[in-house]
Length: 166
Image: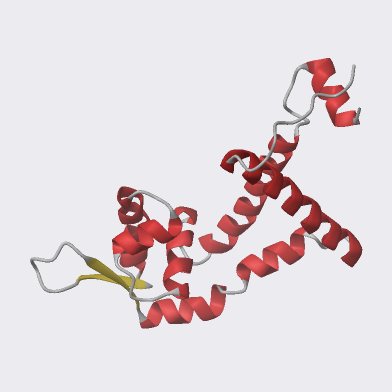
């Protein structure tokens, strides 16, 4: 039994669980990202929309919703600050009677992309600064294995786990 499992069984707490560690790590990534974005007045909630428009300019809001995997209402909320700050514009496709709204990168958005496009890679590099190259490779391999195992369970491609021997 690992020390994490022993602590979990002894205390009945999830504090030392893998899901909690992954959640805390993700939150730490977001806090660093939020600090960088604050200098540009970009809300963290709008970041995924801005990055998607950088990846593919000219999507309509429904396509953006599908690409990111969020409801249309969240797309509208996420785009509002970006429209106000200027990196994107949203226009009706096909005239005033159209229900489709196209999201376009502006000149300000292109300039912002030049300044911020390396931020995720920079944060990732920072997060692994104390790891050797071998440890980084091992970390990625292990996290991918955990992900793939859970994904297989969710999709039903995996036999049920065998309980440990008593």
